[in-house]
Amino acid sequence: MSSANRQKILSTIDQKRDHAVAFLQEMVAIPSVTGDEGAIQKFVADYMNKIGLDVDMWETDWDELKKHPGYRPVAMGYEGRPNIVATYKGTGGGRSLLLNGHTDVIPVGKGEGWSDDPWSAKIENGRIYGRGTADMKSGVASHILAVEYLKQMGVKLKGDVYINVVIDEEVSGHGTLDTVMRGYKADAGISGETSDLAVQPACIGRIWFEISVQGKPAGIQQRYNGISGIDLGNKVAAAVAELEAERIATVTHPLYPSAVDSLPCIIGSFQAGNYPSAFPDTALLKGSIGTVPGEDHEGVKQSLVDKIAALAETDEWMRDHPPVVRFVGYDAQASEIPVDHPVVDLVSSAYTEITGKQPEISGRQGAADTRFLNEYADTPTVIFGPGSTAVMHSNDEYVSIDDYITSIKVMALCLMDWCGVEE
Image (cartoon, rainbow, N blue to C red; front, side, top):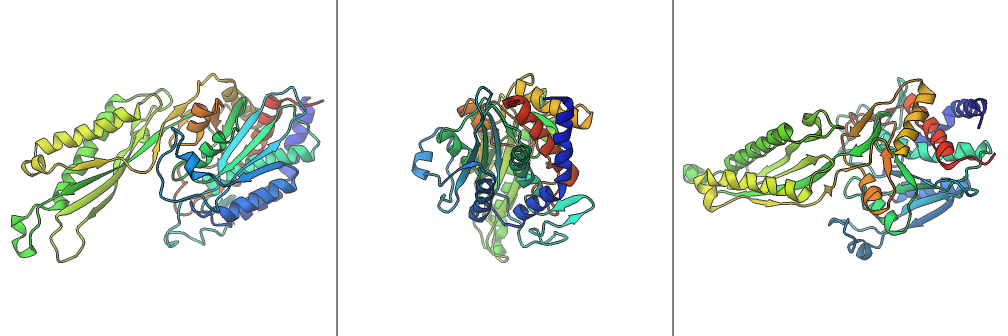
C-alpha cells in the first residue's frame, strides 16, 4: 500500500475520533467487575456482530478447565460470563494476528475517593475517566475499532484476525486460557494491556500467599501471660520485607532495570483478633510476590517458606508453633518473547510511523494473559496499549484520548503490515 493511502487511512481514523470516544464511553458505563461480565460481553458481541465479524461466544466449561495444567483454583464459576472470539476472515495468503483483551475490572468499593461516579465515563482535560478506562477497555476498543474502520475503508486483509474479548483476567486469566483450549491461535498476537504505548515483550509474574500465626491465648487482664498474634505477625511481616530486599539485590532481568518496581514482596492484608476487648492470639497475613521471566515459581515459593521457617527458629514460641505458609489464589507466571521477534518490530515500526518517535521497549510492570498465549497457544504475543499502569486499579482511573486514538492507528497499521493487504 502506498504511503499516501496509508496516510489517508490514518487521517480517516482521526475523523472518527468522536465515534471512538463514544464507543469507549459506552463500554466504561457498563459495570463489569470480575464475576459480573455478562452485560459488557453481550454489548461487545452485539457490536462485533453488527460490524460483520464472525462472533463465537460461549461459557467456560469449568470441569474441562480444571484439567488444564494452566488452571489455578478459583472460587466463582462461569455461568452467565461468556468469552468471545470474533474472527475477521482474510482473503488468504497472509499471516494471522490475534488481538487479546479483557473486559473485567476490579471493584470500585463504595466509590469513596472518586471525584465522580466510577462508571460515568466523563471527559475532562482530554481524558476519559472511569473504572476500566485504562485497564483495559480502551485496549479492547482499539482492537475492535481498528478492524471496523479498515473494513469501512474497504481494506481487505489477506491474513485472518482474531479478536479475543475475555473475562476473569483480574482473578485468574482463565478467560484467555479458555480461548486457547477452544483452539484459537495465530502466527502472532498483541495484547492491549496497559503499557503507556510502550512496546512490551515481557510481563512480570505474581504469586499470592497467606501466612497464619498462632499465639498464646490470654484474658486481657492477664495479657502478659499471652503471646500476641499481632506481635508475631509483625515479625512475619518484617521477614517478608527482608525477603523482598534480598530479591531486589539478587534477581535481575534486562527488561526490568528497576528491581524495586518489578519485585514487590509485600503484605497487603493483616487480620488479627476479633474483638476490641479480647486478646489477639491469632493473625492472618496475606500478600504477593512479583517475579520476572526466567524465575521458577516453585523455587520462589520455597524461598518464602524457608524465610519464615528461619524466622521461627529464632523465636522460642514460634519454634514450637511455626507459622503456616499457604499459596492460594492468583499464581501467574512471568512471560516473555524475544525482543527481536518480528511482532515486536511490527508494533514498534507502526508507532514510529505515526508519532515520529521511537517507542520505549520495556517489560510490563504487571501480570498479563500473554503467558497463556506464549506457553500454550504457540502465539508469540507482545503488549501494547493506551492505558497507564500508574493509574490502573486506582481511584479516578483514566485514559488519554490522544493515546487511545494513537492505539487505534497503531493497530490498523499492524493489521495491514502483518496480515497483508489485497491490492
